[in-house]
Image (tube, rainbow, N blue to C red; front, side):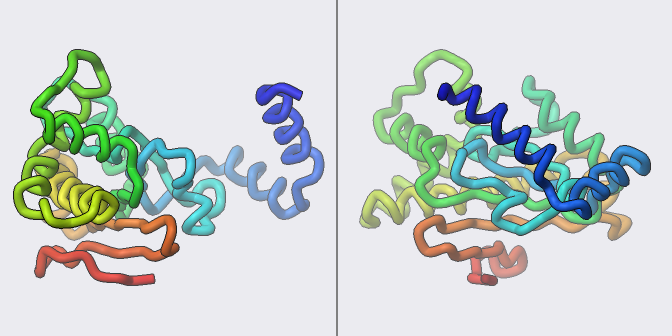
Length: 210
């Protein structure tokens, strides 16, 4: 059986064998529309599914995923993140914005390798990861003594902190923050440890929360 056939068979099981309350939930979402309370900005990594690891149900999270869970600077060429932020804040009225990074992130690894060799190849991948260049260079300078896995995590956390700063640049986010309509959160998920950290924005450090 091919992978597409496997996925199609999975859909049939989802459609035909889901519990009645789940099917009724989807009907409710069709009739009433979505009203998620959280915008979740995550990485494309296939191991890190926001709904799965938070046990969230359909309709509860508005999810945006990209390589290395980057929030680009406002006013740049990348418009997808800006559109998602505007839609979720102004149209959906989300109450929380969560950015989540994770250990063993290939995108962060790629940015670190480019910064270490000072070689940024042309192309969309490295162009996108330029947003991580600052955190990568800081990590190579300040955390050169860490082993590769810990260095990767350190860079991921720094990138999250930079993304929180960038979120505050977006006008609709800034306006909602000033009116206490939305709150910003940065999470770091350690896959092997199954541990979740959150950024203490007053102290500028990540603390274990689960």
